[in-house]
Image (cartoon, rainbow, N blue to C red; front, side, top):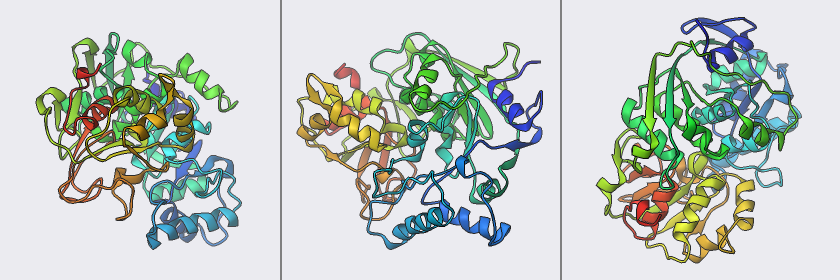
Length: 431
């Protein structure tokens, strides 16, 4: 019996010829990532367990991106960043991207890709559930808790169980009114938020490989919303071109064997799919946009690791072009690189940034911002009674702010169409 792509990467990390689902293995870690929410407790556990003379196993493989609670006056959030700053200085961590400096990057999951840490065949762990985003690069990437991260920080290794794999194949050419967000919301509606618990979610098919790297990251990003241990897409020429623009690190491409065993397989014909939303209060509360069209909104939000990439704004801008948003609409580029691209990329001769500004959108600084609620002064945060449509990844009560708010998850096309009407709108009305 052959192996899946995930099993092959884990076998390599364990120094073994073969691994099987259910086996427990010691793995070597290529990259450990943390941020301002989980970094301080990870560091505290590491110091406590390894002693005051503790050494980082490999400083070149450890990266820190403050990104979650940073553009706020909240003293506790500010203190977390100060702890990271002091730690990076004390231990001479070169891969620390401090806020308030030219090195600041924004949301960790996109920054990992932009800074060349995402390389096919690697193993990446991060103290954030959406670390699975990096699996778009044909690598194994997953989130861990602070204690596991502290152990990796001191040893470079981790004890893991090999997951079973699920395969999702999207056949056909993606229609212009669908995005990767629609595809993953379709899956979530089919298998629910625990349908892939501790399993690898492998994405395949013509429609997947036609996607840009940004869009592929949307697919793997939301694997965790189904409970997935990791999401993964085989590396191809698009992957290599993206990686080689950013790093010369050696890579290794793995792909699943034809006789690899899967727990289950799902196949879709993308020509038969429609624009999707996830209704409050769960990412698997799926419906087609047409069924909820007309629902009045108080806010629209385009941002986050899921929906704040350049491709997301390229989807939204042509719909918003020349119009005026009817409700407060927040635009948050996920990274500082994307923020710069918004000023350079144009549609009909006008920069994407100008298109959003001319329409009355509010543009925030690159960060996680309102995606996970945050302090009261967080940009775009949902308030009591807000009804929001958002390109983010989660919509359970309180996720984007007030527990009294309601959040619909949708593609940037759907959010943009909704913003110019003030109510949920099918993007096919504009495409």
